[in-house]
Image (tube, rainbow, N blue to C red; front, side, top):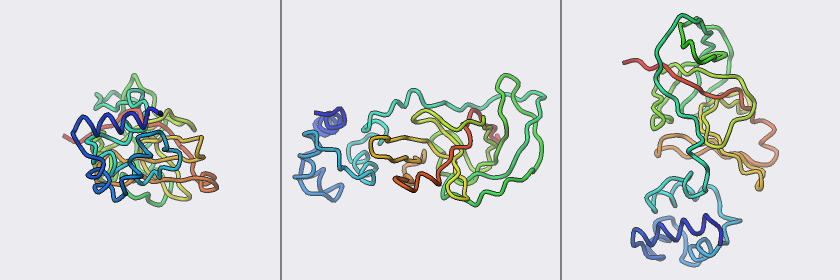
Length: 207
């Protein structure tokens, strides 16, 4: 039995949820729940993760066994006198058109070396303490660890999300940090249009 199946069964039993009740909550039949709990998760659609996690009082990250402890934690940081370029706006919600342009320079942290910064727009990352109007500092890199927050170019649009790879399914998931939003899922040839621009390493919030 896979670890995912074990987590599903353990949580269902922990919260005293019957197989029929769980099936009803996620819009599936009881045979589907039996398959998931007995290790048949290869064809489990990613779209079921969010409702399944909510029904089991957990998160998609926990169900899938993604090492969320390795995800970068972004903190409010003090300012020093290093200048950093603010290029524009990044979507914390639906991706927005990417048009790189210089807006201004701001003072930033001295012990972290970001390459650029972007203004956050939207509320899809509020559980990571990133709010609309916050300034997010980015370190340029093309690869991040599972669960880390990154600026991602999707076709000609940019978004700020947690990144999760599923190489065995040739798929990548961009996960919001807000339970009211669904993840963005790309697979197969769609991956040719997905490019990680950098990792979010800090942010500045208005108090």
